[in-house]
Length: 45
Image 1 (spheres, helix red, strand yellow):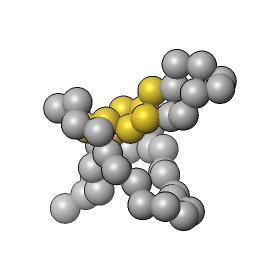
Image 2: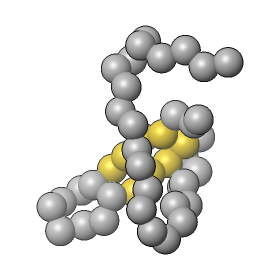
Image 3: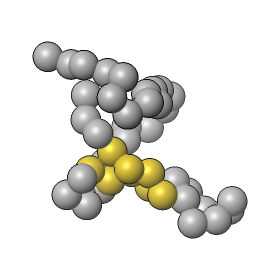
Image 4: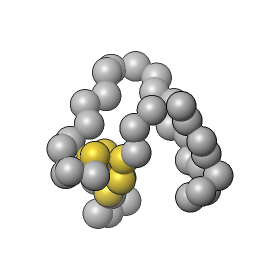
């Protein structure tokens, strides 16, 4: 699991996903599932 930020400047643009360091996240072709969790509600380890 990684924390990412998404950006979509307009309704007609493609969403982009980046890490906290600003590195683009490459998604494989096909279905991709993204889970949105409220800040502070998830513990991983």
